[in-house]
Image (cartoon, rainbow, N blue to C red; front, top):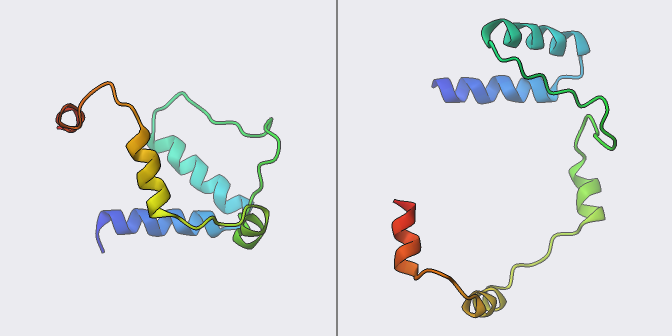
Length: 92
């Protein structure tokens, strides 16, 4: 298993955990190994749910079918300040 796979596995275990003491322990380990001064405090924010319910999200905001012809028509109407070649060169 590669390092990337191990990181994703650990992240997945953290996401699925419902044990606050486990999360607190992970938080302490992360604090020990990272020397950042920044602390993200979400306690003052509203409407943050601890778990994601995909069925609920889909019912609230049903997926919209992608229409390629409509996309191409709208893309062709866009006005660019640079040519496609210049935009592609900026990506290099």
